Amino acid sequence: MRNIILFIKKYFTFFLFVLLEVLSISFLIRYNDSYAAVYSNVFNEYVGKIQRNYNDLQYFFDLKKTNKILVEENARLKDMLHKTLYLTDTLNTDSTRVLTDSLVRDTSGRRFYQQFAYIPAKVVNNSVTNENNYITVQRGSDDGIAADMAVVCPTGIVGKVVSVSKNFAIVMGLLNHNSKVSAMFLKNNYTGYVEWNGKSPDFVQFRNIPKTLDVKPGDTVVTSNASGSFPAGVVIGRIHSVKRDPSTSFHQLEVKTGANFRTLQYVYIIKNQLFKEQRMLEDAQRLKDLHAAGAQQKR
Image 1 (cartoon, helix red, strand yellow):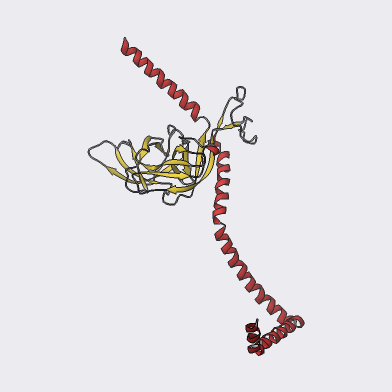
Image 2: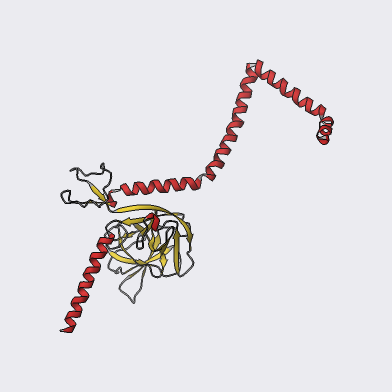
């Protein structure tokens, strides 16, 4: 306390000058319209600058929250796209199927049912430098996630779910030697498959495309109807280079992936409502074929 009193005594003249200066300026502004207008303009300019800087700072710290909101909104919009829906006979509907909003109708008034549901998920771990890379997302069985569900991002496909716990899921991305996705050209629907050669995380290889097919850099590659968990027509990437190998009748095609695996932050996990039914039917048919082949061998 004593030090404060000594400080005030020492600088009393200065403090008195500042106080009288402030009072003089306030009287000048209050009783003179010209000075009041100048003061108002200067004050508003500085306040505006301070508020702008504050808003910029607040915007920076709110980016994570804003991104999360946008991802959730995009998931809702994707659910409403007609390519995620299927039309069934209105006279023979299954009550367990997920009916979309009643506004989603075609010109005849028939209602659509949802086949693909999009679930947003945050990436919490990712690698691009290993031979077999995996991605961990913060969604699990408690959120309805299961193995074999497709995973995409806004710019292309990412991979599929291979393992699930209550709150997390492991995704086998395209950058994995065990990953193979049925793909086709957008321009002509010619089908092959996409896999990774273990080199650059920016490129995958499009296989089984004959040299007789006209292929150019920039051609878009998308998922095919036989892509399993993936909806057909989802972007995989664009042709980056076309090479001819004399020893084979197929093109050597490099595809620049639509997804940037180095910077993944949020993804969408796609739940195919009909995938389980399709898989059960196909497995049953394969089992029948095995039994038939076994019975034929015994004869």
